[in-house]
Length: 506
Image (cartoon, helix red, strand yellow):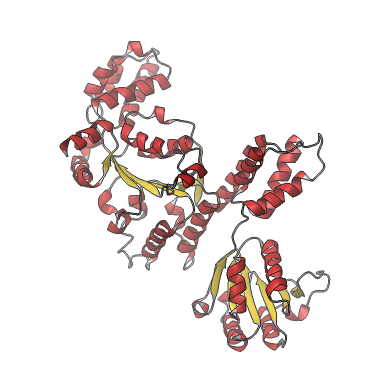
């Protein structure tokens, strides 16, 4: 950001829009740029409450004659000295035709001079009239070096008992845990950890991660998912599990030194209820990465033009700020159905959202692994399935007899039942065509039946529950058949038995 901003100022760009929550840190960085590259320029900061104030000067003498945006912009035009003028939170006034017109007048007057206007706001809101005149810059969150300064400052604070020197490993963990927080947030959470325990240690990583979860909750569109189930709780899908286990250290520094690229993502499509979402959740535990679920329903907001696109940008920026992480999009076929061509029904919002997401997937450099699931492949635009978007596309079919037996075993163990009382092979045979979710529900139904009668459930109860259930594979047989036909040549089977059979065919 420093280099780009310095270049723009040198190139005499009249209007810059700086998107950030960190006003003080951004202004400190701008002040350093001016001292180093543009020492002749004055540095003024405007707010609606104080008007213009010289940067670094006390706020006890506000400039009341520049409180209104129009008066402040007039001041910029009248000044004869070189200057840089920051307008804090001007975005609410950018709905006023008068303010927009005055800004355009100012741009025309200061173009080619040593005067620059910077609009600083956490919200990107640019009127159509200014879109060709403004350059937008996102002020990056603190990197490891900046966070290290924050941590060092906190460690210098007196503590009781005295804080022992952190090991390099503990320091690295505390710094990486704080990635994605602002400088103020990092200062507060390090201080909170020291107050809670009396000192900062490696054990305080959990305190920092809790603060990061609050950051995600405040976003409102992303959800931080914690999963305590491992992949052993999923029956079958050995080919898919093997692929994921191979990449469990793919985001490590040793993988970069080996020359491996960072994984981009994977699409898991298949029959509903066959474990697609559970695989995504357990991958987080396997890889030791935070799992963020992107709720596309919350992205779409018709209250203001451009709000939906801003929501998506904010969510993706949050995911990048805490990377490496897994970004989980469940039922992506519903989220982006017709996104490439349905421009009329919602004013083109869906199309723009879809295009923005595709561009981000293609160009992202930070380690955000996109894990998407889908049930209806025909609803997804072709661009979404193009090679290069995902590292792999897996197809999760209905479980085989062996996998159904394993699923019954998993759910009986989960409910602390002795396996020698049940014949899982017989249950697997009877439940042909059932998904994993339907098997679990049949078992739960049998338990309710027996519980209502005040006795332990038996093999016969499970068989009765299975026979009274009409599986999705029969009620939606045409959809399942079409999905299988599509996946046979275009996707990798998640089950090892199917994968081995396909390899023998070739």
